Image 1: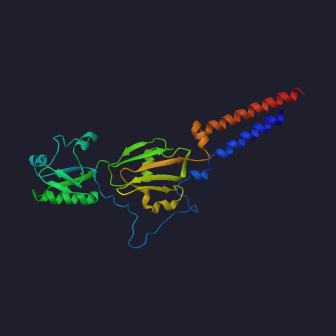
Image 2: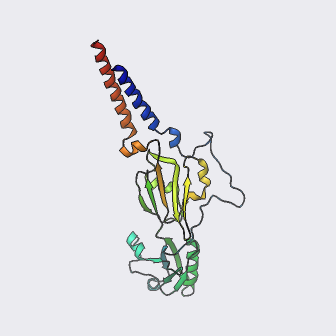
Image 3: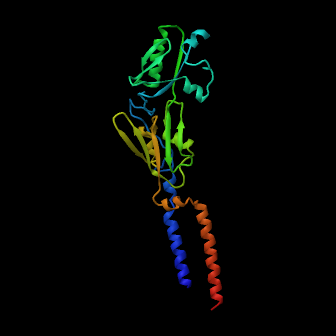
Length: 265
């Protein structure tokens, strides 16, 4: 009887130890040594994020300010242009149509497909200057939405108004990976006009800092796989501390039971 109990206890310990992810698999940006990491970029290359080029159905918020209020209203879609709520920004936005163009009040059609946001702003500025001098044009993307699924603490779709978003910025707003997230195989799913692409990145490898794929694009979907060693525990959604505490209690119960058996001999 006692032998069977010890075998059961040993089996439970083996299962838990094989299920737990080692600390090494949880650490980001791993290097061979503990010193500072530095990567020197070759001449002509930079560490700046790659540009995103506008495509059909992209949505832009465009604000045109002139020297007087009446002229400014002529270039605006709505009267409440000074409100900066999400709804107002959406209502004052332009969608790039199937021809790659937007249709601005007064100015008319402007082709923006294939341009960066900065280039689009310059193109609109040039058109506006033909009608009024001294106007200030600002341009921002509205549909910079990225979805994150799988083993993160707050999965969902997030909207960004900055011109560039990295994978780590997305994971930060999503509450980071859960304990069960596989940091070795994080997938970035990207749809383009001609193909669907899936990139797989390793968050543990410090060389990811030079990977251009870590910079996300509007419409990207990031999927974090469950770690294969903890998939069973992930399904049960049992925290590691709970498992450890349960093991301590089980060990104590078995010890007491073994002591009682020894008294009965």
